[in-house]
Image (cartoon, rainbow, N blue to C red; front, top):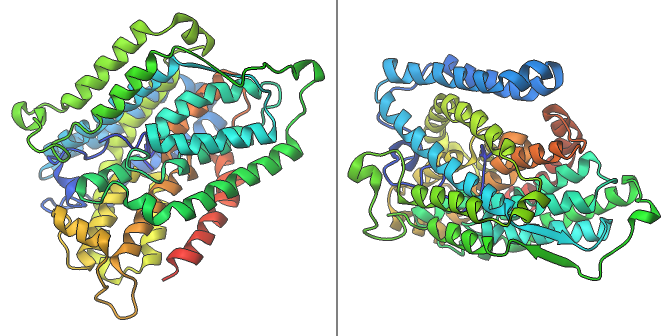
Length: 479
């Protein structure tokens, strides 16, 4: 999702949403063979979104004790409707369960593995040190995913800034490391991985977008460093002692588990011809990849360095919050995604690059960015007379096809707009990508001041990100 629930999410390495070819309504950009749900069926998702936004602020005690029940109840209401009142509803629920299990298997395993790696930075936080750490995190996100980079770096980032943390420290970490940083490779963020599974070359995005990505990352790091210089409380002189070692690692064996996780992401029939699918063979809602990820999580926790876990103050609360909230989000999102998919297919012919950019982006900020990417990718392929289910057609689309509309952009720019928007706009809200919520929870456990859902929007993402995304649109996608 866009938390991702966006979530987001991840960890672009994951085959997270719809990575299995058996997920029919995702592979076609929407369920083309079922009747659409009534508009009011999107209300449970709206209600859950509003409660996530207002609960911690207006009724924190109730929300803290009952958010699990609220999420499950709203998700169950939609699930019951699909099970008994919707054509092919049971199949769509099964697909959603597959997506959720893929999602939770990946982020849980990354959370556990990263929790057993203690990174100690021998420098106090400063504008320069923090800016360098964010920039490094952005690069790392393309190698181990936004979830992996976020979980590996958030704790050392909080430690070096202890005593000088302000809300913008957490927010810019989410902007850079948990979202926009992962915008160059299929490993970086789920939408790009799904594009890779459908036929977009692995290095396509980095080849077409690296300069603009670099500009966005540098701009955010400079804005952050300016804020850090102006507003961050200065550490006491007694707290400015620095170690001669810049970085010290404890729990190095977990990097082997991390490498195994990254490799398991590609264990998919769409990547490896003939690779067995448990979904197709035994009608299970999970595959070999999810089994490996779960086994890695268990093994990594059992074998992790106890001192590293203790140094990270490791506990399962952040992943529990994500698991319970996102089970409701995944279920309540089904009708919203169906309606959006139908709209995208019906209106794609009249959509310009500008509309694809802003529609994909805004919806990726509040819905799951992976299915949103697929819906608008399918719409764009249809506009160019190409089949979204054909790997050859997707490759042709990425290579560049002239538009059937006079003075319109080629297909390459459409794909770039959809790819950039689905990843970048995940930073707009806490539910835009799964690592956002996890970073928020970890920061709150340390006693850091973290913005509420609404404050995150009006104080940071709207005034900082929207102008940046507007600049990108003006210079790249203004067609």
